[in-house]
Image (cartoon, rainbow, N blue to C red; front, side, top):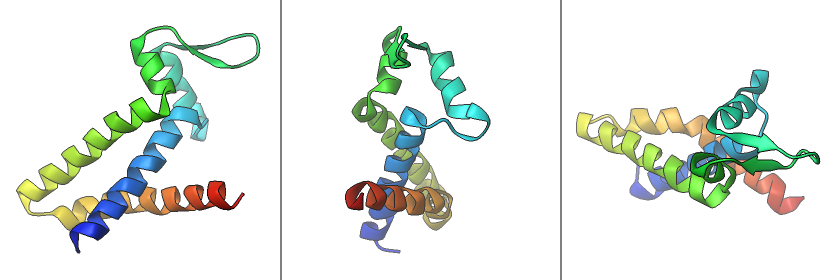
Length: 109
């Protein structure tokens, strides 16, 4: 697997994971519960409001993507140290496929 392919999978997986945590409800409202536990509250119009710096970071797509990217890079780095980079890519691959689908849906309409 080339470095470009690994980067593409990692980038799309980062996009998808960030999008899920930032704005989706998730199965059994797992992402909504996570945001609530970090301190996200909702105003009378159901708009999310951060009550602390962690909640504000979760609500900021760009801020959250940095933290998710650090986790993805950590996974790839650990896999590289152990000699199993392809295994880490396979872990990220479903998120990359979903990220590509979500990105195309948003681009096409």
